Image (cartoon, rainbow, N blue to C red):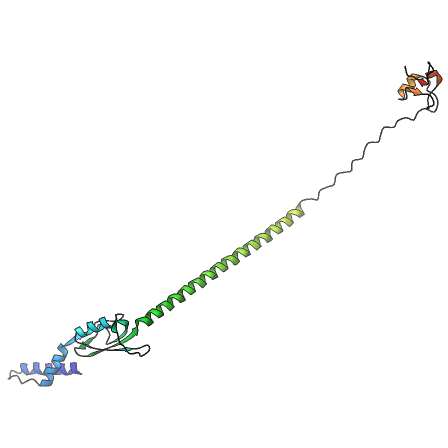
Length: 224
């Protein structure tokens, strides 16, 4: 509204000057409006600053500051313990000197607590993700080992089927003992026959003995 009024006043003055007549006296309201437009300045951005520093910047430019706790509605006692979280008018906007800039603030203690909680939540999430990844790796390793064991067992079964069963060797039959001819039931005709039969010397009373084999009559035939 003030800017529109200022433009109207300026336009009237220009028309008056162009008419060549004596300039009319400017109304006091028009002068005041022009002064207010000239006194408008750019509002600095003070978000994330502590309230004491934000207040110093704004007041140095001629602004008034009104700060409220937008979180819990607590009273603000020590400005350096609070941080600016919202601003109206925002940084970069134009406002008249002497106007009020409304700031929303939050306690630094609460900001620190929220940061700690966020960091803990992030750490817990990272730990949970790491545990899940480790479990997945362990499960995969166990599954791979089970598959390898099953494949090895199947290969062993196939190999066992392919190899023929061993053939037992034939039993060894011992050679028959040599047959020793029984002593002759009748006297050997001579010592040569007794020796060939393996009976020499031939003792008296044994099969094959004959006196004709015992020339010296000592009871032993074919002893010489």
